Amino acid sequence: KKKKKKTAAGSNQLMQDYARSERGQQSSQIEDDEIDLLQLFGTLWRGKWIIILCAMIAVLVGGYYAYGVAVPKYSATTTLALQIRGSQIVDIESVMSGVSSDDASLNTEIEVIKSRKLGEQLVTRLSLTEDPEFNPTIDDGSVNFLELALSQWFDVDLAAGEKVTRELLDRWLGITLPDEVTFSERQVFDKTVDNVMNIITATLQRNTFVFSVSAKTTDPEKSVRMANTLAEIYIADQIAVKFEATENAVTWLSERVTDLEVELKTREDEIKELRAGSSLVTPESLAALNQQANDMSDRLVDLRALAQGAEARLGALQQLQASGDVDAMQATFSDPVLRRLYNDLASGGQQTRDLFDDRFSLLIQREANDTQRAV
Image (tube, rainbow, N blue to C red; front, top):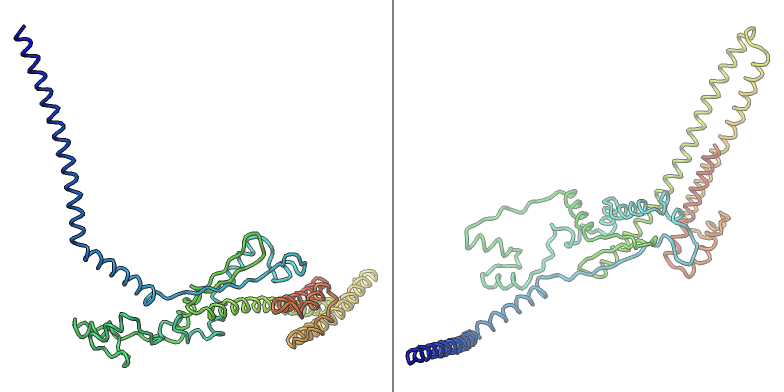
């Protein structure tokens, strides 16, 4: 029994020693953690000036980029209303020749607005080849802070037109850059057009017949001027398309008259041949041919008169529109839409005048189409 008691007492002693060892290890682990945190804080505190210096450098670099390198951009947007809500002025076909209201046609007009043809007209009208923002061959003479600091440090004469990068490479590294490449006038123009079209956007507002034309440049007034001018060029291009379609209709009418003249001459020759061999022709067939020839002759006379009248009418209408006499233009057609726009000219501004001109051009085209169908 004494031996068993000693064994039990030994086991209890071992368990107590193990428990004390575990508590000691946990206490040592906590102390180690506390020491690590203190060491970390001490390390940060000793390097506080480096941290502050890095933060100041980051702030300076960010400020330099924001105020010395980054160039602010200003966006301007103008809208082209193809159908005005609450006013049945014109439908979509009345505003633009050959344009319907389906999505494909409207998206096509978006591409027309962003086309290179209109971009070239915009560059020419605003002389954008003289603008260093779009013409990369023009040096605007501006010097940023970094260039100024380097020029003073390394004695580079910016006033003499020296480039900092070129001078430093040549002076300190012995690297001579090739001379700047010269471009032809056409290459400069094409590159300017490319840069202009990159800052132009055109979108169709959802579920509307309204186009938004935007331009983003470094000058807010320039952005407004470019957006408005592009919209004006687009409207003028649509009017030119209408006049071209009308002129094509008149040309076709003239060609049709010429063809009928040739056909009449052929029929007359056939009648003469038949008369020469009258012994082989019955009186009924000869009378029918004579009647057909007379009908062709009458129709030719009518077509000549119609073609001459159409040409004279087209010329008069074109001269009238070129004169800008809205009173006479309104009196030319008995059109209620044109009359309504005429009454709104005093209060509607430039947009109403553009719609008035578009409606007048459409009426001219409709008249030419009616004449063509009559033929």
